[in-house]
Length: 194
Image (cartoon, rainbow, N blue to C red; front, top):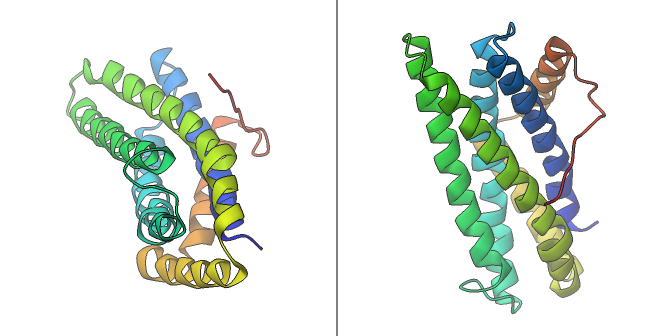
């Protein structure tokens, strides 16, 4: 098994949460009934699962090893992807701040919630496409069996240390609940490429 298969599986989970966010922000825009808890749970998921755990696996283990195997870090796909990880963090920070202000009664923060969700969703959609179709296939060509084995062991360690045991299942459960709450068919992942 390629270590990148583990990351691709996580991409599917992240895309499900992005779909939840899009549906929730569309409802908010139309002033339909939507709980701010949906957005808060999504921010928690993104920060813990998508950023610390998933991006941690990429930045701390996969990318440095790919560099050792000859894929340059300072230009080319890795440099772009690292920049996009940072950009994603800024959108999530913006979303989190807008949620706090909106809850305090700042009605103008509503458009900021929607904008940050849409910017993040668009960024991640393209980002995941690039990883799945450009960087990971490059990596699969240069990584040996022992590289993959070593990466998978490190991934498991990161998962247990950062997210904690059982948290993976917890987040899958949270996503399923939010999908039900918003009337989303869980298997139906919107995937657009621009």
